[in-house]
Image (cartoon, rainbow, N blue to C red):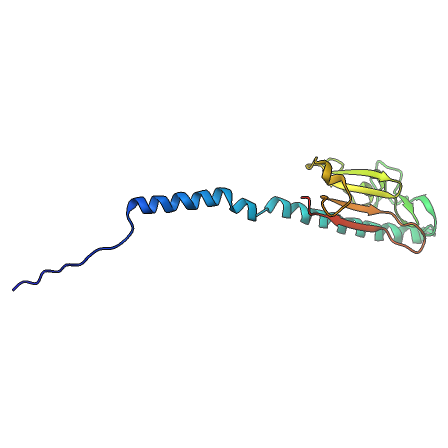
Length: 169
């Protein structure tokens, strides 16, 4: 007697597979970009790099001012062409550190004016923002901003205060 094999095949139908692919596509288009913000993370990292450049520039400018004996004076220009833009006369300092002005900070940290905006809100405080970001919130010195704030030294015993605000990026 012949035995008849009755095997039942199981699997997904074509319609079920298409529906799963559609649902995954919708999730990929809508949900994933909300969880992954690569551009914001890149901007925050760039701001950290600018902070490092400003801290290094402040230390180098202070060393140059100390060699010239001008680290205890406000409003003096260094004359080292290696630290400054060759077109400028020098980096103006406040107690040996760069002043919070556009020309001093861009020249000392060797930042491009095409890539960075420097806004002096009040004397002694500068806000540095990426030129690619034009939102008004980026120019506010608070945790919701997207900038680096530079507050110049106020006396001979202090250093500039450099803070990164990246939550608004």
